[in-house]
Every structure is written in C-alpha cells, then in structure tokens.
Length: 492
Image 1: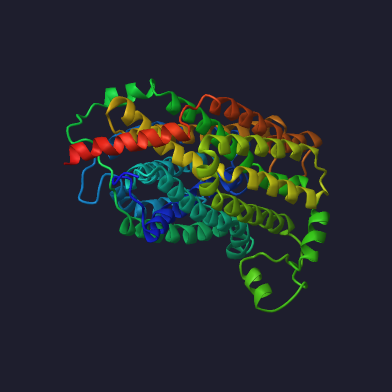
Image 2: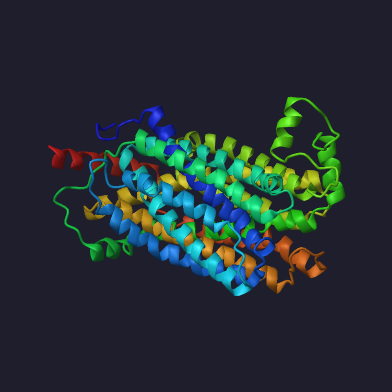
C-alpha cells in the first residue's frame, strides 16, 4: 500500500459521518413527507405539489455543477470543501424551518411561498452537501478506506433516517395537538438544531489530504468536457438518476399506502399485540414511547401514523445492519457485483408489494425487511464508486476534478428526486387521489403501483447500466497505486 493511501482515524470517520446524518434530516423528510405535507397540511393539490417539486429540485440539480466548480476553486487553510459545511450550517437551519411553516396566505400565495422556501432549502442543500460529498475523494486515496468511510457515513445517515422516519409524524401530532401546521414547524425546528450541531462537528473533526497537481490550470470547459469521455461517470450518472427517482417515487407515497390502503383494524391488532396502545402497558419504556407519540391514543386516530413509524423505523434498522456489511462485501466481491445483486433482489421484493392484501401486515413488514437488507450494502458502495470515478478521471486525464465529479453526480441525484417527486404527484392525480377522504378503488390501485411495480422498472434500468461499469477490483487497485506514485512526484 502506498504511503499516500493512508488510513483514517476512527474519530475522523465518525466526525465525517455525522455530516450526512445532519443532511438526512432534510433529505429523508423531503423524500418521505414533503409531498404529503404540501397536499395534506398546506392544502396544495397533488399535481400542483408534484410540479412544484419538479421545478424546485431541477433548479437545485442545475445549481450542483456550479457549486462543484466553486468548491473546486475554493482555497482556504481548512481546504476546499470542509469550509462550506460550516458556512452553510446556520442558514440551512433557518430555511429548513421556513420551508415547513404554513403561512396564512391565499392558495396562490401559499404555492408561491412553498416554491420560494423549497428553492432556498434545496440551494443550501447543494451548498452544503456537494462539497461534503466531495470530501470522500480528498480525505484519503485508499480505496478500501473510502469504502469504510462511506460505510461509517451511511450508518450515521441511516440512524438519522430512522429518527426521521419513525418520529416525525408522531412528533407532529404530539407538538401540534390537532394543529398539524404547528406540529410540523416545531418538529422541523428540532431537526434543524440537530443539523447545525452535526455540521459543526464534521468541520472540526476532518481533514483534506488529497490535493490536485499545483501545476493544474483551471478550465471549466475542459473539466466538463472530460466527463463525456468518462464511461464510468456516464454509468454512475444514470444509475444515480434512476435510484433517486425510486427514492422519491416510492418514499413519497408509502405514507399514503399506510394512510389509505393498509387495514386500520388489522394494523391496530398488530400494534395492540406489541403493547403500543394506551392501555397496553406501563413503565418507563411505555412512557418513553408515549412521549414520542408512538403509542395508539384512546381515540385510535393515529393508528396509521404509529404503524407507518414502526414500519419505517424497523426498516431503517434492518438497513443499518446491511450497511455494516458493505465494507466486507465490497472488499470480498467488489463494489459492482454487490451493487448488481442488491438492486436485482430489492427490485424483485419491491414489485412483490403489489401482491399484498390490505390486511397482510406481517407479510408487508417481512417483505420490506427483505428489500432493505438486499439493497443496504449497495448504498455506501455507490458513494465509494463516485470517488473511484474521480480517480479514474485523474488517471486518464491528469486532472483532479473531485468537486465537478461529485457535483454532476449530485445533479443526477437532484434530477432524480425532482422527477420522482413529480411523477408521484402526477400519478396520484391521474389515479384520482383526493386528500383527507376515503379513496376510490382506482386511487388505491395507483398508490399500490407507485410503491411497487413502477419503482421496480427503474431498478431494472439501473441493473442494465451497471453491466457497462468498467472499474473492477483489479483496475481499482492499479489506479490507486499509479496515482499515489504521481502524487509523490509533484509533492516532492
């Protein structure tokens, strides 16, 4: 192993990982609840909300490459990318609360307010998360350490996602006491404070070690032109696009699935068996769950919320277990092989949701756990593959453009989110969804298809793309060693 490809201290890996935990208090809320918040709390029509998400997130996608160029050309004593994580922290927290505040405006005014605050939030997300993601490529040149770093990152991200998935709706109900607008504002305010703290820790505990050749001249045209010649980048661009279409498409409609399709009586029976009802137990554990709104109230009005929270939290817990296996599996079988297997199995299990009846509570949970454990190892490996793509570009062209590589990948991520969110809203409208009423058979069919068959189609596209990914284990090691030798020459 070359001297340049250094190992990272555990404390630094943990510190870096907390930045993604902070980002996921926005990211996971956006995927799981933003469409639902717009339709059921702000009162925006589903097709309007879907279009709003499309335009706002597309702007964010186009801003990502600009942010990558800016970050690549930032020079401070703290590095190129770290400072942006700190500089964006407080503005991020403020706008995060504003984006989930319901104004006392007309329908048109509410739509404009939602659009503006969403644009601001997504812009700050790029200012923070594009440089943060690029840090993976400059903290170490060791490909195995990058896989490990990505695993730490996504364990923290999954823990944050578990909190968001499991606690958001119960906290909204608890803080709001019947006033959902107030509940959302207070809950997101809590998440915003955590974000600021976590971003600050990330800045204080990390270092940038990989630097471009000091003789490298700045050329935006050349940086972006080289991308079209980089076949692994093209593959990862479309993989990311389709993956995040699925994240927004399926993630944004699961809450509707629990609110409208799952049998509330069957769900109540399961939750009662687990002791999650107001008369189901006592003691500190029951009291703790109740304090987070995870106990069925006497009126049984929050059965869907508690059921969905239990489903989401337990799924995220299973995902954490899978992510912990990623480093071993990536080293043993290679990142590409693990990603291919993960997407294939997850796509099959996802499509099988279409076969479930409304009272199949046990099967619903079991199928979700199979989907989660299959896909989980691929999550950190994909982000480690982005760093490998940056290395491949430097190896081929002699230019280090980490920020641009990650920024364009973030562009595809945001474009995927925008398309997925819009498609979800459009599909709900096309199948006749109307907020806060009993749904028609056609609307229920649309909800079921949107969490199962439609996202599975995009996973099939991902599998086809990954077949053409060129960077296997052997080439990865060759690139790592040759780049380490080059860096020695220009650092001496």
